[in-house]
Length: 325
Image (cartoon, rainbow, N blue to C red; front, side, top):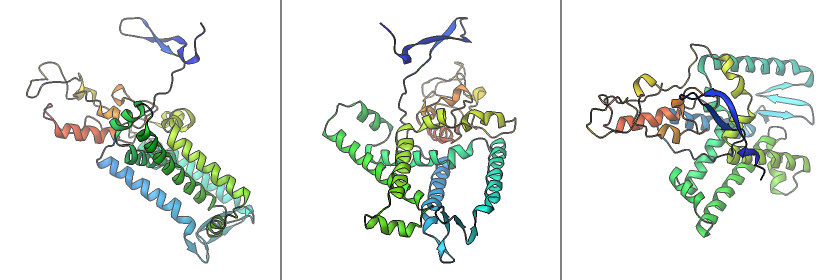
């Protein structure tokens, strides 16, 4: 019987400790990631950036400067209004310069701060975080969501899934509407929407952007970062020895393992890591950062918050504080 694509194994060059070639799957079926909710210093910064970026995105089209929309790229009349300034198509050179500065700024910032853009301000990260908030509010935290997905189809499951997806769709539609409001005067767009006289052009782009938001943040999530975004692939070329990255302190943490309260775990050859896997459970891309830096890591520092919380509570290690830095 022929095998499916995700069942086809290949031999790789990597050699295991016993000298044998490691066999891996050429195609691996996607496994849904259920990030656990975490609080802490870095999570507070993520929440802050979610609110500040979305306040700008959703609020800016409604802001009026000099009797005009503060940000409006009027393609129909070929005029671009930016905070009281008016640009015409022949001023395109300014947009080119702005895009170049933004690109070089991103590259420079990556060299200094690593992937902080990915972890805190990237639209994919921000909208995924918002969708996860809705999911947690409706279905519960990680354990409850896993239990719900594994449960047979029943009335409760249908109700929770319907509420969650309805909220996702409503949020995505409002996002699509706001996006179109940057290219069509948003107040006129709102009036057309209420009177059911929205043009086919505007309706198409509202639905298109809403579908993209719903699909990327609700379903694809980390797959966009891992497989679709080119930044994840070439960002390592911009790292140097001084780049800020999230890393696990192996010298302190290894060998990791569980231990009994009050035992001399250091005499038993154990490090400070109790192998609780909380750092893995809170990771939005589902990696184990203890295995070293990986291109999937978006630098969100959720693992630091998780380790801070666990190491600050337990009495199984001699030293408190995160094993990550």
